[in-house]
Image (tube, rainbow, N blue to C red):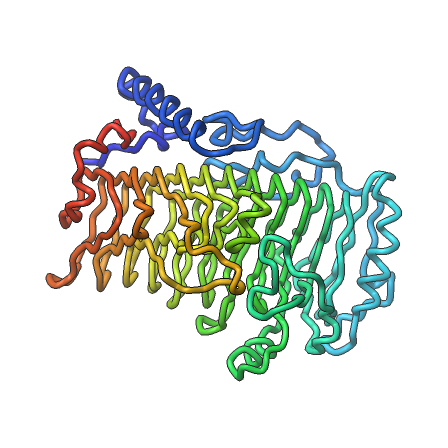
Length: 493
């Protein structure tokens, strides 16, 4: 007999309305609960409790660039990206001296091309086509109303000269480079203050050739924080689709301080021992859709972030309204989806569904620590399958990872409202480990229909400083999650 779908399945398109009366009552309870959450935490003024489950469809435009993109096989949140016309001005990187022989530097060619196309931002936009070939380049910036199109067989290769990855200022919500004090290397493909940007193609590739950077990290000779492969800052209406991203020096895709981001049909690959090669890390962003991606990396497949300790608290730029759907992959050291640990600006309204994780250290992980401050609230996780994942569900603390001595040990994060349902894990080696923080109870942890198969008899749940309610859990959850007083908080029908 099929397990009951959780409320979120009803909201975003399941067949749950076979019982309309129950579903309707549950929906009313959900709205009330979300209203209570809003009274405790600060949300954007434009946020309504259910609006982020129903992204407004993009306007029809027969001349839009999206007409070239495949329609997702299932429910999609791609409406977060509002359609824009295809750029009227289309040029090739070869028009600016680009040579795709795998050896010639194309740094100046890309920079000249972008400088030229910047003149068309208010003249109908533009498209830069990268044809078949292997184009070595240092970092270059994008422009607005712009499409970077990688044709079939096109590969952009990151330069092996660190000087072609210049040093830029640290992010204000981090206060310093994430790995080293001071500034940080710019990303290979970078954008700041942009609107209406598309990075796509016929499955062309962007290869950061990160081994040079990983060696610096392994040898402890790294002087500045490594650059990302793609970083988009302070921007709006961004689409990344139909490309393969390889061998990032550091985090692969890093949207930060941005809104209306869609990352769809992307493959991300890095050696499984490549340090900190996270797949996709939305950071202090709103209205983010990540769906239909395959990721293999040396860190989290997806990690939601919002700033680091006192710097993130001061900036107070949350991540909210984020949908992560139909993601699969493997990471032997980290998690399928991570929330945190840099979460000091707050994280709320996150939906994770239809996730398939294999051969990984953790399936779902919420990471916080003393000094982080901020909040994590209204996290919905449903329809998760895991194979050979060491710890299927994990809340962790105590990394003792702080930017400097200015962090506040009294800044305790608030975690409330984590809804987990329809989870199957096969051949995990440990039970769930849910560790809250002393004097900072993680509350409203609600689980339904969680099954851990072939778990060793010696494995059991480990819980500290958490409170919640569970139903249909096997093996039985820890006593802290059998609190009948929390049942009304758990909004399952």
